[in-house]
Image 1 (spheres, rainbow, N blue to C red):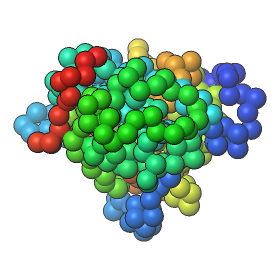
Image 2 (cartoon, rainbow, N blue to C red):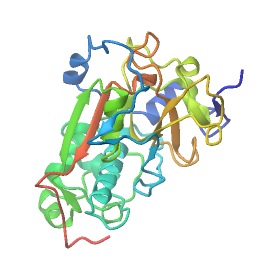
Image 3 (cartoon, helix red, strand yellow):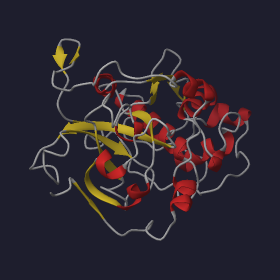
Image 4 (cartoon, rainbow, N blue to C red):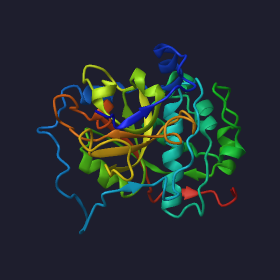
Length: 311
């Protein structure tokens, strides 16, 4: 039987799993969130057989914010546990463009988050997207080229709070987190903008090339382990033999995930992860636990751009 995905030898092949995990994940789940999810389970397997609605209109069967031009090209965290910073920055970039605050896709500073968001996040050691978005809201985030280029280590914060008052690009965003979102709820959120989610990384994931990844191959969905990687959910789809590699019997619904392992990994830095079977015995919280935690930025009455900082 053909698999619905392809693997390859790549830049991660020679790394041990521990080396790979330590350098290319970096999520620290707050105790408040893990405690809230300790005994959670969906009351019954969640089906996508019906058609969820947004207002009076049905949710489309396919959505891809990257193809639509609202998501920046994936970058490489490069041996630093900074997935939380990459995810927080990317989701904020998309939020700003989708809501007309930016006129074109504009990249914000990941390195500023790494260096300066040091109260509840820990640079290359790890962090949590909710805290990253909170930092952006309270302090402001600069343009990528106005701070300093990303490098896989932490330095002293290169901007004071006083300087940030005149150098930030975006500030005052909202931020929300919610546990145990069904596929329908995630798709509803994705109609507004990309969202950040958490997942469990499996050793075999490092060699992914293309297609739809499944629990049968990855073995990453046990509820006895915790998530360890933050990514951005940019869309979803249904298996189409003309569009997808593989066969329908493996997986029908999938998520489109923006990773932070560079554009040479996977499908230009993205992966497709099977979305079938949420609530079932093998994928109680989705493939690789992707339905477990969700964090996303929002526009509020306090959200504003600095008119003196131009892309």
